[in-house]
Length: 221
Image 1 (cartoon, rainbow, N blue to C red):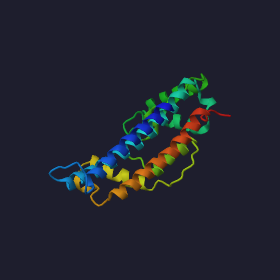
Image 2 (tube, one colour):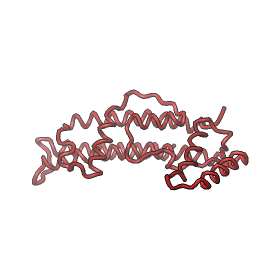
Image 3 (cartoon, one colour):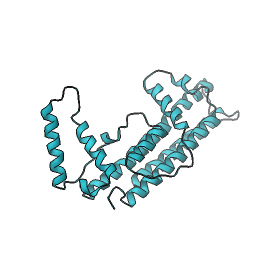
Image 4 (spheres, rainbow, N blue to C red):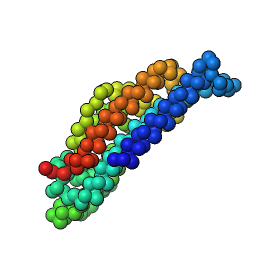
């Protein structure tokens, strides 16, 4: 999990640096001057929300992929892992071929392959597709991912402000709102509150993932 923890610290430092520049620009005695500092700050506020979502998705996905990689390197077979991992793997195998135009023979072949992998004790391999992440990560979704893998976590915040981060990120990504308008009504104090809650929530999640990884809690006892 060292790679993921490194990503978390790097992104936090990056965001804190960016936030400090925003304070400098907005302050009365700031040394940074543009033709329209007020507009620049509005754009930067929206970009800060993008940076926060980037941190959230990068850390959650990286943490889970490190767990998946460790599971694969550990040579875990279907019968050696907990039921949660068994279910995720089986559903992912079916989802790879699922579709309205999929013929029955494709399902029959896939079932045969699943049975063969189980009986031959083949190592389980999971990909990012098993996470179901596509720009939709809020506190509820992140906790659902952890719960599906039986990852235990202790949170000092409910992470409710992650929903605002996700929604505004999607509005910007889909072009539904401009960078000047997206966060114009949020003060720097509001953004600091959001930033700190995101950091605190992700820190709690990553501690749970780290314990899971180190203790190989994906294995059956």
